[in-house]
Length: 179
Image (cartoon, rainbow, N blue to C red):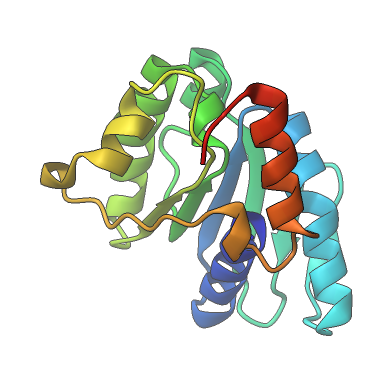
């Protein structure tokens, strides 16, 4: 559900603006490709969107608007530094619960927020909870005083998940969890 939501949001931004760049970021470039790349190509074909795909760059381009989406990774300080100086219309970070807390905070505060400033761009953070309930993503999701718009859903709300109730029952039994 969250992957499709982010993909639709990035596609809409690309179609609605002229000459802008947006970014989809996952923990690594390989995970960005594994999570999103084929989904984007499938949606493009299914909905006849007419986007062009640059396999080497992991770049999706709308030839009508001249806008694009870049896919990449942000797993260490060097990777996020490569994003510095960009000018983005939208940026989406997927699986935020998997990032090192200091890397995620620096990526958002030091790199992406300034890069979104020129266009008054938007940032979307998605992910499943981390193993430990602390850090930047946890704070964003739980501390209302920080001012983030937060939306929660469970696997029961995911239309792409097969038999979520049975899955949750199996997970509760396996892990000795209560409802």
